[in-house]
Length: 573
Image (cartoon, rainbow, N blue to C red):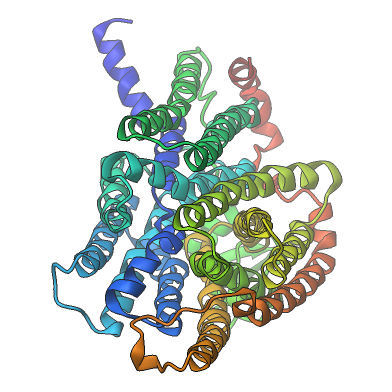
């Protein structure tokens, strides 16, 4: 390569789809700060003197911010991706930095509503990263959306363990400094790639799925390394140098996918140099009828000219499943309502369990370093759940036409088992429960996002996938604050009374023993089981839809396919 050609290739590389995937992996690997709440929540509780109900209220506002992403979706509909990512970076830093200033005593003790606002702002930044990176990747790889969602959400699941390794290396065991790390690091990473995440023209590659499997193997190796470090840190005393070495290896593994991206962009670059008219780029466009509908306000359907109607007049006249629904058509459809109920039960229960993990370990007498291992286990198995549901559901859908909602049902049943292990603990059961809850929690999100994209189309996906999460914070509030938190505090007050003390005699309200979480988690298991039944109903409703070719409209037309066959074969080598 000459100097000019090298420069042109670098421009092509940094603007390519595969480099964008790598950049999205890094953004997602730092976007899961909300899953570390169980690690630093005890600092908030002890520093500010909160009881469990107040702490769970704070956890609810964290879940509210993390799951109400409608604003980021609507902003993404009318602004470029770089603007969405920039807003997210600013919100992440402001929200978590204010929490760090509070727990370190650098500012006066804020009111409860102010703390709720800080954590809601910080957590909501996650939606801007999701909307900017995840939605853009799905649109750039429409035929591989299941594996794409699984990988990206998998890196979010690993982010808790990744950030834990980095904070041990940088700050030691000062869990308050973990809040500072999650304030500046995710914001910095998003800003580095802010101009490189955007929609690209789709380049058809026959080996696309095999490339994603390469990414999968690399991410599995990273997950296994993090799990090995998690186990080793509990068995052996790590020095600062050992933590630094562990964090360095972790960072190297995060950058290994870059080599895959480079190889793929070189192949695309060479393919573009072939003497074939427009062989490599096939822009995924809406059918001409839809374009005419937007541009001319009329569309020719079944040989008749029909004027377009207001979106309010077509709310209850949706298109067939898989076509592009309007936002109102999707939100008011029976399928979305069923998804909403299943998400309320499944994700609401899972969020409650994850948020209380620190206090669960404390109530059962586990030491602090073991409680941290529970959080890391949830993070790592959260990853395995996400990639498993993404890749396996895509395989089962392609080979056996198995509806994704049926896989959601199986995942929720697995979650029930995890809740029951907390309700009726035996020695070591919290380790198993952490694995089951982490896996099932992670598996639900890619399934939810893929189902929404398949049933309601991609035209308004930025908004619809964020609307799909709205049930999570509602479920978290009812199940976490109104059920789990209040029952925990009631049990803790009974223990205080038995000791002859009152609430004013202690700074923070703590419950000890297996009875603290028995009744709350029996309720969570029952709610999750109901969610599994609802999800099964959706699987039955959509079984005929999933028997068809749901990705057909994203493929080339027969006329254009023969013209680009040579280029496709070249890339597939």
